[in-house]
Image 1: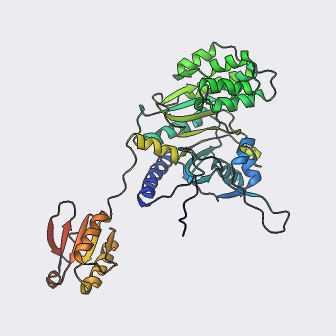
Image 2: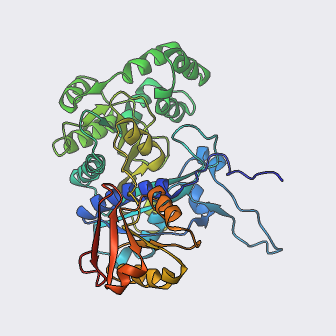
Length: 430
């Protein structure tokens, strides 16, 4: 009979893997809560019109869509969420008027994207999503970026390990508008190419720009533009020497306004950061390992039009997401993935079948005390039980024998040292 395997682009989490995931998630959630963010949860299934409303045409092919069933023509099309920003925004809109601003929410959950699986990019994946509604102030952008930095730090990453690259969508779009004043769809096409420029060689980047019918003079300007990066003060000074239109000037002002609040040791300004999703309107940023050996670990920015688009009152918003798949790769590379627990605190081993009932009672009493305990479920001899206890990483073994029970005692063996001692059956010394 053929063996079934998991779907390509999905991950099976065995106990140790799941525990690592839980520990990373716990750290991320703790960081979010330390900033006053509250956890929310939304359904995996959303209306397809919602999912495609403001994500750009490029996302439509990446959504898992449910086949319509039944004869009702009015049945809405449904799809699996590809991120959490869209459904969390829907959640906000439903109670917008009743909520005190700013609203600070986060979620950690699964998403799905129908695309070719790659290292660090799966079809089914976990993500932390953090959203702040109701503030258009630079302090809000800075808080989101600072919180993202703290998410990294609280997992053990240092400033030498990661960098947050920040840009402004208005700044980049404004400069491109002057470079490409007459090209049809030129700005949006250029943004898409710039967004993936990190994955391209110089020749591939040139070829992509040429295929988008961008002339040689404009291509050269774009290639120079994406080289503008570095410490915030240096980049701002360079941009101020350029002749900028009104849109780019506004974007530069927004970038300058947030710079004073940012964690300077991990932040760089980088004009090549574009963020592909169409809903970003201002500040955008991505997190990379310092060597940029891997794809972006996190990313986010300002999306001030989405609330209104979804039927709410006009409301500013900013947020970010961290993908577990890419974060795990970085943590593993730095030797920082949390270690799974060693195993149960106690394995209770009856020396024979007559002692089994007492062993179960002792295990139950231990659990009531808040410690983990296992006991024999396979009628094994003592030697086999000790082998099993060692295999599962039990810290201590309680040996329940008839002679010791007559004295109202049990034998406890420390599995690391091998040391044994008799203790009272009252379990007060356990």
